[in-house]
Length: 150
Image 1 (cartoon, rainbow, N blue to C red):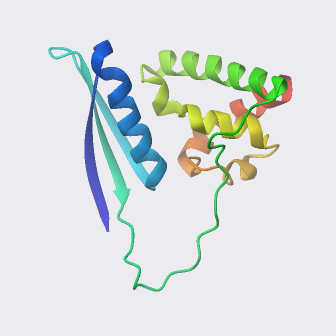
Image 2: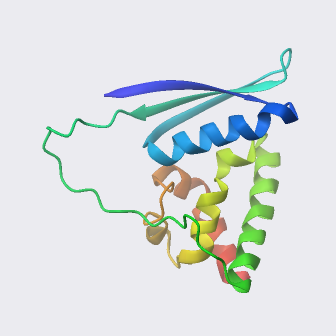
Image 3: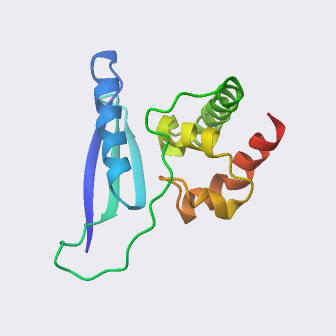
């Protein structure tokens, strides 16, 4: 069953990190279907509406879901750090271009996972936690191009 959740991302330095972490934690544990955002000028914050699928109960029968790759607390090599920095730079430019917060493009954990996993094809991006059809259609080619050129 589809559900929704609203997040407020306050831009004040006191709240920004906490609000972003709250959103990142939620994104990391739920299968997001759709995202809508709006910037509230009068209050100086982002309003984020997430549509997601509710987890099925343990009693329901379902096919086993393949485990997706996620670089939790992995140490990056020098080459992987270079890839991560290039991906972060690309994400910042893409976010500015689309007038979105950077974490809407990809979270730090997702970019770190890409740097560690080093997918060579779009299909391999599906193996990384946080990358679904929508994100791959929008950004897959550019991400793979960065991986080839770094």
